[in-house]
Length: 267
Ligand code: SAM
Image (cartoon, rainbow, N blue to C red):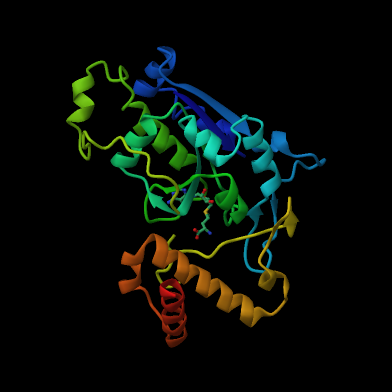
């Protein structure tokens, strides 16, 4: 299996993947791990990878260009093409589907996985929309970056590769392992703001390869932006983690938006 890790902190991986089972699996050729520096895919003097968020707000967002270029340099083609070749592009995200042993089993059955590590306030949403086929979270908490998550995934998946443990039977007896679990079930997609998932983020350019940021975010209308964010957060939560809604702090306005979304979904 090949693993590609895209990060702005490549040195982070000196250590976590150089010990024990993972190290032995690398030496035995069971897993080949490449760590790529996202700044290599920038074109300005300062090697800029981040920018301010459209619509205002705290923090910076990882720009789409270096991420798209880094993924393109790997020759993966479209989502359809790379999934057909048993390859997966994975965005590490607190808003993602929870990574578990079942998902690890599905990944271990693939030929190549690409792990995209976010930083700052997150990653321009077009990466999740157009190049990743999976969004994975390693748990309901917010890390400073995706690197720890990538290391968790590489470790968990590597020990499931035939031959990595020496005694193949032992991984089957471990916690969480269901033997019939090697299934690819496609893309999926935090816990912020009153218990809801985070809303989508976008940064410059507003038009990137024909992909436009939602008009409301460049309108300057703060109330509409706030309402759009709440609505998309509710939509994402309803879609990805409906279990969170029962404990979420919902205002009357949220309940109205939710009724509207559910109505829209039923239409
Ligand atoms: N604003 C984001 C939110 O509320 O969901 C949090 C961004 S976090 C400070 C920066 C990066 O760390 C994310 O883009 C993601 O790559 C990574 N990250 C944070 N928590 C994570 C988790 N639980 N699982 C996987 N990656 C995580």
